Figure 1 (cartoon, one colour):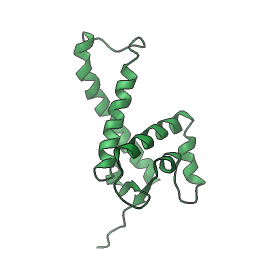
Figure 2 (spheres, rainbow, N blue to C red):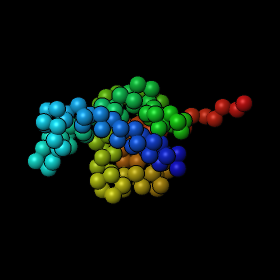
Figure 3 (cartoon, rainbow, N blue to C red):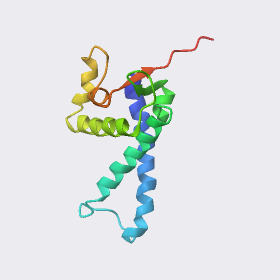
Length: 133
């Protein structure tokens, strides 16, 4: 459930980033909305999404949603991931969503609680220990 909550937090933030990224392009389109004829626009947003997730994953292993829920993305041996692993993780996660979330549902059946994106990028999600006060 913590993973799902982190995904929702990050999705809200990513939508805000998409709004800003779109606003930056609007002057190049005479201030008009982007349509299906603008076939590069979805690739632009996918690139923005990768930069968003990739930067957070490679700089501390936590997006803001992951940080809020005390979750960290690291390599299998708990080292920071690199940009190649971030790209594989991102593209595999997109494919998982495109296949009705099957790559994420895999977490429920995997003995190590890892999704397709974890396996293919050789990364894992780690839960920070709760500090006792």
